[in-house]
Length: 113
Image (tube, rainbow, N blue to C red; front, top):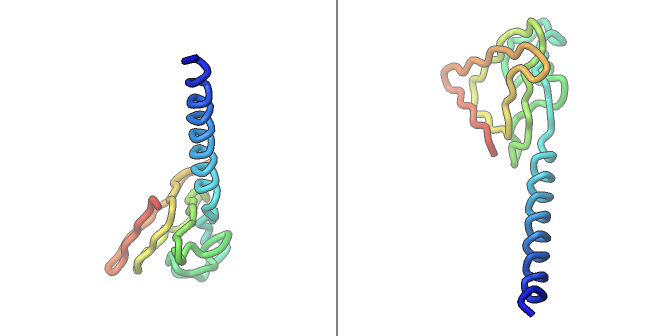
């Protein structure tokens, strides 16, 4: 009897664990990846907020801040942050050399949503 009573309980625990893992995987995949590439904008200022410095959409935080910001372009100029920025992830050197991110007066970078 005890084996039959424990069986459904174990199955329920496995199902709940799988559901939580799946929910976490969906959350991790929700971030929009964009790469710092100011070489595409040679006349630019190097500011984070200049859309032309990014290969994808500008990671402006938006309502959720769901951006993965990658710095991996060889020889890219430094990124200047002079405003408040909130994103999910900042990645230095993902399949590349990384890069310099400089936070100047008035700037603030928050990552890790």
